[in-house]
Image 1 (cartoon, helix red, strand yellow):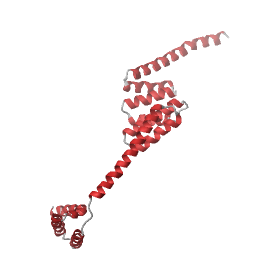
Image 2: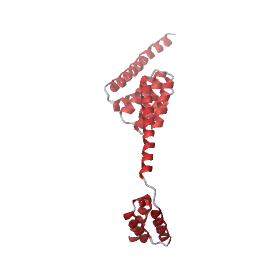
Image 3: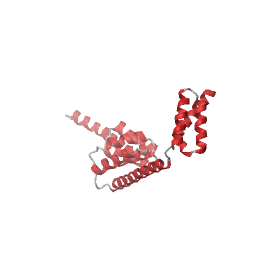
Length: 217
């Protein structure tokens, strides 16, 4: 009986030491993050995970943020995606929001929008995610309208070829069929001198120029 008690008493100081080391590691990781020493923060938080088996969602979220601010974007995104399924709805929502921010920086705007939406589903009270979602949604809508307007303007600016231009193009096509690329190019360039609508075939003219340059070499 005395041996059992002695063994138990001898094990207690070792347990205290482990708890002390664990607490020091937690404090050290938090300190490095607080000082914005993100590279060391990554090391310390990985130490919490690997050496002490600390898998708390809060610690993993700090690790993800440390990855992000240390410009380790792939690792950060992987961790944020994992944490978007966290039990803690605040961490899940914030992780989804940060995932959206990283997608936005990579110009993956639809993925970013979906991530912000996920953040709001996880926590409808996440005002930052709501702001990001609404801002990006409006920007995408406006950008889409601008893209359509630009395409319409470009189509309007490009004038339809005249009958003369069409006739010269047909003549050039016949010369191309005979492998007379330089003559075909001359036909198009001369036609362009007197009829700007020949520019409708600008890509064709460019290709003829490239072929002639290759043949000359």
